[in-house]
Image 1 (cartoon, helix red, strand yellow):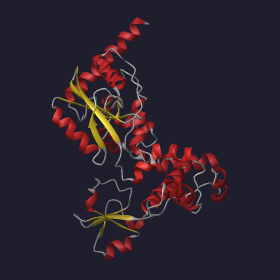
Image 2 (cartoon, rainbow, N blue to C red):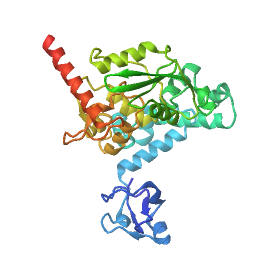
Image 3 (tube, helix red, strand yellow):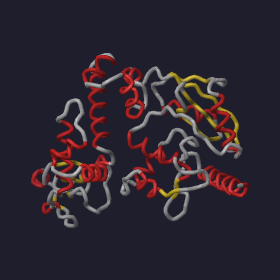
Image 4 (cartoon, rainbow, N blue to C red):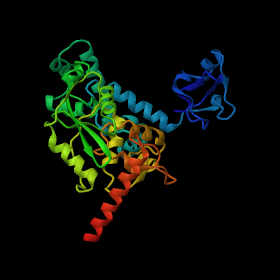
Amino acid sequence: MDGAFVYAVRSTGIYCRPSCPSRRPRANQIQLFPQADAAEQAGYRACLRCRPREARCSPQADLIRRVCAEIEASPEGAISLQGLAQRTGVSATHLQRTFRRAMGISPRQYADTLRMARFKSELRKGKDVTTAMHEVSFSSASRLYEKSDAQLGMTPATYLRGGRGMNISYTIVPCSLGRVLVAATERGISAVYLGDNDAYLISALHKEYPHAEIRRGSEEHSRWTGEIVRHLAGSNASLDLPTDVVATAFQRRVWEALRAIPVGVTRTYSEVARSIGQPSAIRAVARACATNPAAIVVPCHRVIRTDGTLGGYRWGLERKRSLIDRESLFSKRAAKDK
């Protein structure tokens, strides 16, 4: 995005181009300007390292902006990839590859995101789900609910209530790593926490879902709880359980990549970033791992640093090491049995 805007850092009084290799400042220290002149009028000095006044918009960035403008100008989001290619004068294959490399998603996913944003806007205006659905031209209720699962993290009706009304039940049982809290709705696992203190686990659940209806229920979802406990004990290798969590599109992509890591195998944060098509998003991947509410089901413990050290783990590095060692041993035993 060089040439499209510059960012200024309040603490240093310097402004840079987006690709500047200098250390990234904290978000609350950043001020954005459309061009260098505006930043200088606000009292900022040009960075001597990246020389933002010399930045020119790259052809790729110009292409991405034109594609985004075409998609945004189509109210129904119905423009096809081939149609976008014809309007921008490039091949469909080149367009798809360039757009995904720059944005991390496909043009179709970008259109779906815009449509869902318009849908949420209609809900916030007080319209009911059916009316809002037709306002943004969703072809059917099934199509809407399919998209809402991926982009809202909940049903449209639940979103309309600001997340209130999510009916979560939880149980806390002993496991091989101390205590495990398993929380779920009728649709899937919402949280799996590990620890030694029940009060802390319960508090963490309420903090994760502050607007949900949360209650203790030992019998509900007992099959899912049993599978998780057996997995932690090493007697149940595969763990393919449904999830019902609130997440951003990026978090979901990372968590899906984590679930694809085989038992007994580890990946580095950079490898996960490359697997989702965003090799430079290593810190964002680490953040998505750290905010994963469904430990074990979404195996964030299988991600380590490039130098082989464990990195961080919300439930303690000893537990992370234990999980990795157990899964490695189980994998070797399974291979030997074959």
